[in-house]
Amino acid sequence: MPTLALILLSGCGLLGADLAGDWEGEVECRQPEVQVEAELELDAEGGGLFAGTLDMVQRRAAPDQGASAELVLTVTCAAELETAGGGEQDLDYDIEIEGVDCELFQGGSLVAWGCEELGVGVDEGEDDFGTLTWDGEDSIEVDDGRCQGELER
Image (cartoon, rainbow, N blue to C red):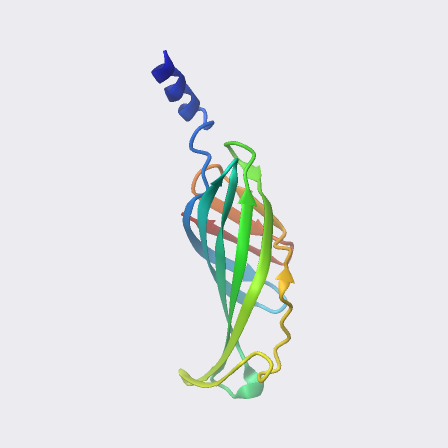
């Protein structure tokens, strides 16, 4: 009988409600128009809590620095996400920006770095990423009203 219960529970999504693993995807934003590559690595902490890191890379043109200039921002965050069992759901989360790196490339070559030196304002600390919706399997949708995208495992 215990084997039958495990099969039924896993088939209903009550077991395996797990965010642990490596996630990656892209988020597109309006105003300014930018595309962000994101990688999320999570480990199970128990009780539906998952912790890890979120790394994001944003590339955008920097026309004030020259015709072929590209500004690359790399943001590193500590992330904690919490599930409420299995199935599709909006996730509770706490994401805190721990560091931001800025680099300026011209014609593919690194010509300057440092956010302060490049005049890029950086706010570290907690950040609001809007709604994170997990499909209960291998997809997390991101939507903060200005940026939308998807991370997949």
